[in-house]
Image 1 (cartoon, rainbow, N blue to C red):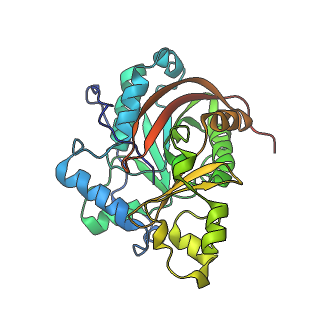
Image 2: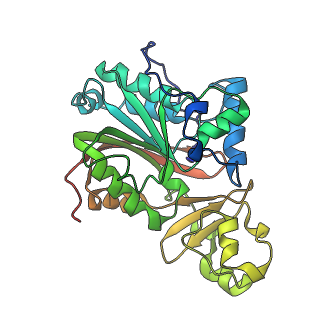
Length: 318
């Protein structure tokens, strides 16, 4: 699920309606893809219900806010001009129900094509929508790890890959395989639209270091963990870790800042702009242009956000 900033300074207009492709209803997805809703679904369920009941202008930030900023970037039309007339567009990490339509309108408005929208996420959203008795957004949905898509996409199969703050939801150790997979599946001339929040507005003095946590709380930090539940697996004898909720942690080994959300103890990860730009190049993604803005996120953290347009350089060496 994606991490999103506060959208108050990111408003914009939308292009007109365009045709949408037909996709299977939620109930027609293979039975083996539907499983009981487990731990971690409560937050995304609240987001889906908020959108469904109040509507897309209810104040919850969405992919549309990033796309409206990207729409104003110089040469954006030129960058998208090389896409096919029916480009295959993949959203990696899905949250707000309107994301698919926002991307469809964005692509059509800039190059008059009729995009095919697919998305991949670890959450079983089709089943969640069935449980909530809601219509599944118009897209083809895959339950899969975005870093391992060889069973879904051949090399060079996708025209446009979108990650909207997905990198802020996963540890630094997971970034490289995820971005290499973006490079692998992009067509020659294909584009990536990748947004992330950097760590440059965060103060080291306001963070607890992982060394301090080891000294003061005998807490071993797990650089692979996504939340406090995962952290508890390597600190099973240390009791509840709720004292970390709402805290900012600095991981010396990876130079990450990690915010521990008050709800559910979910982690959000922040790296430097320089690290991210260097990693793009290392993974075969050339930075064409970017937009940056400063504000605060939905937890009140000061942040600087980057929306990047990237082109595939070449397939990564095996």
